[in-house]
Image 1 (cartoon, rainbow, N blue to C red):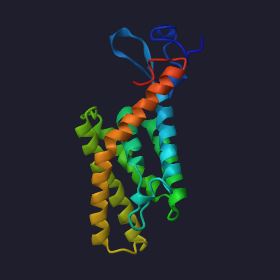
Image 2: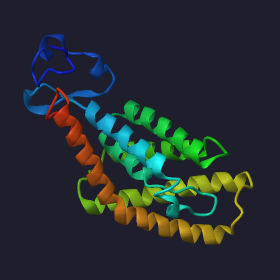
Image 3: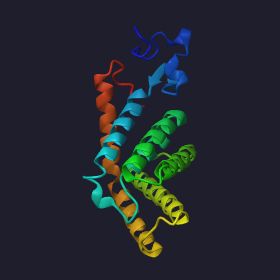
Length: 210
């Protein structure tokens, strides 16, 4: 049996470290239950993030604020920062941020950089904070949405890419951050549902949602 597919405690006690553990996609669970795989959550994060980026020019077009192409990708990045190991979360964030830059147009790298900063902030906060409740999910997404948009606005202002008045953009940014916060539980629930679905259809059923 492949070590991808082994259940808790099967074949791991002697060999200990397979490539999923080295990649941060498998962790030792408490109570001697063996290894818990995290790759279903990483895959679900990739799928949902890609769908959000792909739908942003149409379904989420109403989220646009001036020169910014706003979208609920911040929810996916916040979830990755709190619930995935740092390097897989960083790899996913770089990829999804780059796709967002390609869809939103120049200057390239602005969205990607802002999402990486958001990811790092969430990874630090994860040491002290659990976002299992709706209230904390909304708070985290609202604050991180403000941070992400503020970084993009600052970068574009420095490059003289902002055409609308900054006061107007700031007010609209706060409004969209509130909208992101209010809808955050819906996207968190959708992501968790996708994690459970992948866990059920994968050989390592029941261990992927950790």
